[in-house]
Length: 422
Image (cartoon, rainbow, N blue to C red; front, side, top):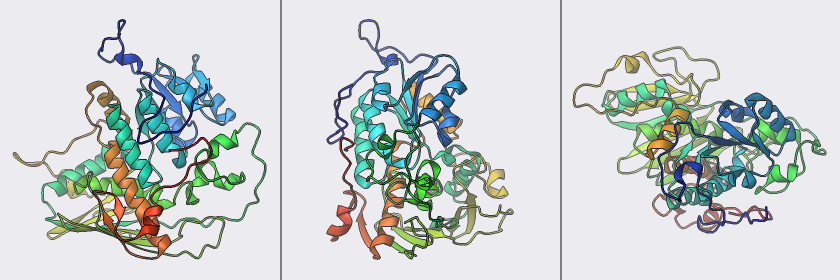
């Protein structure tokens, strides 16, 4: 397959219509009852999206994970090391992109260009430029893109959202998020990559670095260029619920003020501690991300090391924990609340994957659509950026630029590497 990875303004060369939209004579037909998928990235979260019978194409740069996934789904799935070749498979309706974070944008954009719908794990992107390109690609190619901040599809967030939207704690002026610290990481020497791993492809668009087992797979998250720390990992869950509750999916803050501990003691370069303050306008409210912050014992007991957010209104408050796992919870008062006639109804998701697949058939916008995913990722990106620069940023959420700060604006994008270019 000889094809450039380069895309420009959301337009690339890979344009293949999916199986379910092409009839015998090229006519549009209704989607089949059984959707067929390609799975890109087969470790960690990637395992949970494997389904015998519908996962018909598998891709990973690690031969070990590829073979394990093939055994898991059974049958005769087609196996790939290059995701671009998987995207050429016209039997596939959609793809699950569950790779490390630094690959999410390119793979999603190329999948949209190939006519595939996409479920991409959070965080949606690593830069503001990437996120906007993903939104434009989904719109240009009329693709369904669901971002894997699955808290919105869980009962705790649903009950909390309808409780708050119906005015039960009054007007919310502040949302305080808390999370435990980023790890420091014990020093581990660089080494040769294992023979079953195509490490150059694993690095892909990120800056080149020698292979280190403590900077790949799940622990890549604590390297700023690859993951971005807890705020980009769990913040993409907790703050996703916050933007849903606060109707913030199409906007952003007007200022970001970050304070972080940049005295790195281990092998990772994500701030061990931080506090980020985001100011929103029209309506006016404040979002605060703190590590470690304060957990509360209000309404119910907390699991040690938990994370979540306290929604503070002028008539009371409500806590919603987690935002990613089935453990997403809220206080009993919200669970018991029933929306009165004429009240605000909130979408009750059948499940995050189920919502995605339903939308693939109906072509409706999913609950955690790519614009929302981009806006949440932007909060995480800008929080880190304010900490790194050590100053408050004035943000234009419409044009997505930092006001009067050329240095900060240069950091809203990043160069790719070799053929791995946005």
